[in-house]
Amino acid sequence: MSTASYNYTMLCDYYELTMGNGYLLAGLGDRITYFDMFFRSVPDEGGFAIAAGLEQVIHYIENLHFGREDIEFLRRKGGFDEAFLRYLESFRFTGDIWAVPEGTPIFPNEPILTVRAPAIEAQLIETFLLLSLNHQSLIATKANRIVRAADGRAISEFGSRRAQGSDAALLGARAAYIGGCTGTACLLADQAFDVPATGTMAHSWVQMFPSEYDAFRTYCELYPENATLLVDTSNVLKSGVPNAIRAFDEVLKPRGITHCAIRLDSGDITYLSTRARRMLDEAGWTGCKIIASNSLDETIIRDILAQGARVDGFGVGERLITSKSDPVFGGVYKLVAIEDEAGVIQPKIKISENASKITNPHFKKVYRLYERETGKAIADQLCIHDETIDDREPLVIFDPDYTWKRKRIANFVARELMVPIFRQGELVYHCPDVHELQRYCREQVDTLWDEVKRFENPHHYYVDLSTRLWEVKQNLLGARG
Image (cartoon, rainbow, N blue to C red; front, top):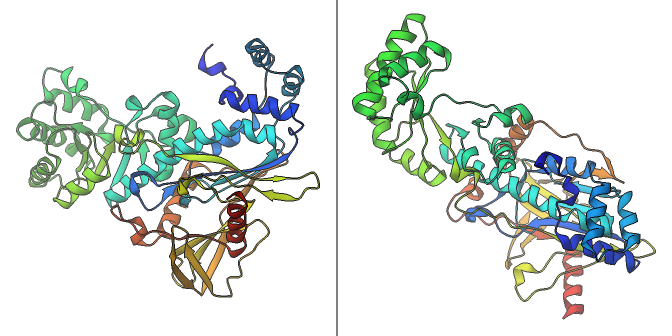
């Protein structure tokens, strides 16, 4: 079976189906449940993460079904009741979903997606929701860190050949663009999502010609409006940059073309870029850009810029597409409430000896509180679904991780973060294109204080529980204790 013919409804952990079978036999299959997806810690010990992957979740939900071959496969596996297999024949998602829009800065322990659906439906979709949102949120978060480290210089995603599979390359390029990258080397990402694909030459191009100069001149003749020359195949300063200048002089200058670039893919980027900049400027090519690549990430980029590197843009590959420094996002999907037979919502909690794994119960909404004068985000508050925040009255916010820490806020604006995605199985949300998502992400990151955006020891952003929700949680903890 080729990957193109897979039914992604079957991309679930086996126990989703064993539980579904059990729910049906136990008379719980139609019980309305509430599940939250959230994460517990920010990758790379950062101050915030970036939500991404919702569009793929939507496509998955819209196409949920079990084909005849799938049901026969499950029948051969054994262990599934015939009533459950008949149920799967007409299976579709009929529930509700709320989520934060892609590109939103998000924080630990707050819902980024909530599902209200019959137990079997809500359970079945767990695996795909987690893999989609975990993967793309991870890459969007890493990309945003790298983009911020570059301080306004362009970042292009170069990682397809090091990605962990074709989907990781394609969707990783999408997530990186949402996080702020200017483009990708992945052509399919351009075709599928309109993420701008760019690229020029590899070392093999230079090696194919009798000399480095011949390779550069030919490239400039073929692509005069996009002449970016890779100058480190032999020796950057002795041959690479001089040959690039010669090709620019002989091919581009007579045509009046002044925009061009060189790329450094090895060596001491700080030293080579400063020397190359001087050589280019002395030759009159002050508008020639210098692009750097070669196993870069936010730490290296920030360090070489602090050392005075003269780089105008970066190509970042394996350390972005795999989030090499911290490659697991760690989102989880937990039951937080059920409805009894009368339709009354009953909050549920998971208790653990590890305090960080104790869940926040109940069907919730999330408010982000913004300072009215500056527009800066100052805290998030988790509330029970029927609560509203009156932003005309002062509010005291506690830090749940450090209960002695509190702040009193006034003159703020409260906005709900999660928006409806599905109602009774029908899509009610319009998916923005990646360009809209990138702009939205940039705008929302700009609402965060610089202290939250620090790479080392970022400010601990407050995510508090409303008084009502805190009381519900304490009552459940006491009852379970």
